[in-house]
Image 1 (cartoon, rainbow, N blue to C red):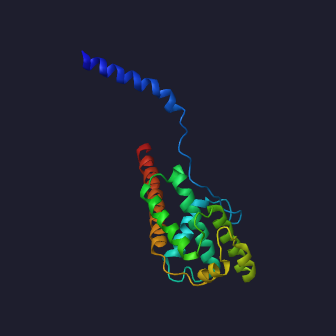
Image 2: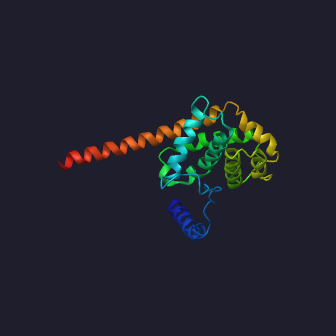
Image 3: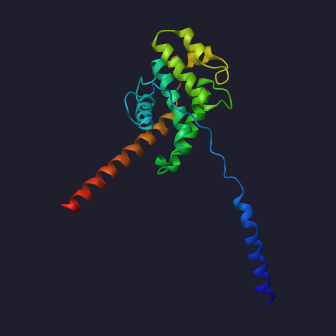
Length: 199
């Protein structure tokens, strides 16, 4: 009898705190970032475009030889590492989040990004440097890198001109491209099998 009373008291205690738990705010989402207007040509999906172009840059010989291309690829990687973990369309590959986090840390070390730099400042700075480098304006590229994210813009520019090996970035982007290709193939196979059943 005492055991039953104890269980009932415990149950009533849990019921009493449920309204309080409902008032606890959900965990805040991570930092966000967006791509600039010129990141994607046309009406394509910016995430798909960033995955494919960045995977190519990090996984092909000479893919990062041009500092303007390196700046764009680095900006895309920063954005992907920030946005994919919060995008429900890409929840099919939970291990990808960890790979992208390692790739982002590797990128920050390679480009001398300030600790705790806001992702948007990194993305905007690297895209600004990309535009300036394409125009042949090296001084403009340095100016485009905000000190908040890039304390030594000159040094970052030198790194962009001679990117060190980045195995974590290469692996993460290859994984992202592979997952995207796999889901595309699954979707195509589903349409084919569905068509066959209708016939």
